[in-house]
Length: 264
Image 1 (cartoon, rainbow, N blue to C red):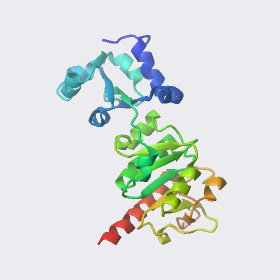
Image 2 (cartoon, rainbow, N blue to C red):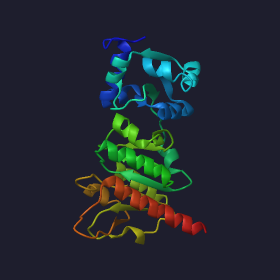
Image 3 (cartoon, rainbow, N blue to C red):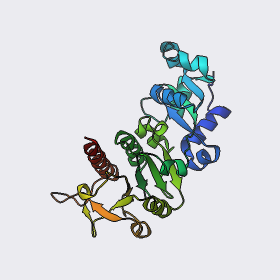
Image 4 (cartoon, rainbow, N blue to C red):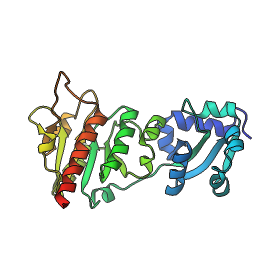
């Protein structure tokens, strides 16, 4: 049983929890909780599990599949609390391989509806966007350089498992991807107030790209210059904008609504 904070494996877990650069270098991250480890296992991404002493003793039946199929370590409750990134821990976490996808495969997805994120910085926003993109039936989430690390512990939790099911990719030049989508015959709409139409006036039925910009500054000018047209969400009261994740959800579900109506 691991009972020391100086244990090599403990140091590795803490490093994976705290350092995005290290996570990228080794293509690993930490997932916590029964559901997340089950998702990781089903995706073929679970490398090793760590189980608190108390949980292994009191919840052994639910852990039988881990103990039989994967390497695991028992961790003292005191050390596990220091490893966990949550206030109320379930007492299980795992080292997990990062899923990876090809931009070529993503652009060839038959649904032809992509969400593109230009410099989203909040981990919670990104996780919620990933979860919503799955629910709205998007082809993939394409993230520009500067977007927060998807494997940040807060982001991973916010995805509620969608991180293992929703295709995604980081790209150096999001404007280049927008151009490719347009060259394939699809419109790309970006959220902006100037010169825009209401989000539900755009046509998503034949496929489209949807660009969501930075929480504070919106879409970069270089990206705005590439899109087909600008869209906005009409506001009442004194509001000027919505949270980025909320705005993305509103537009994605409008696209999903139009596409469902088209098939009726």
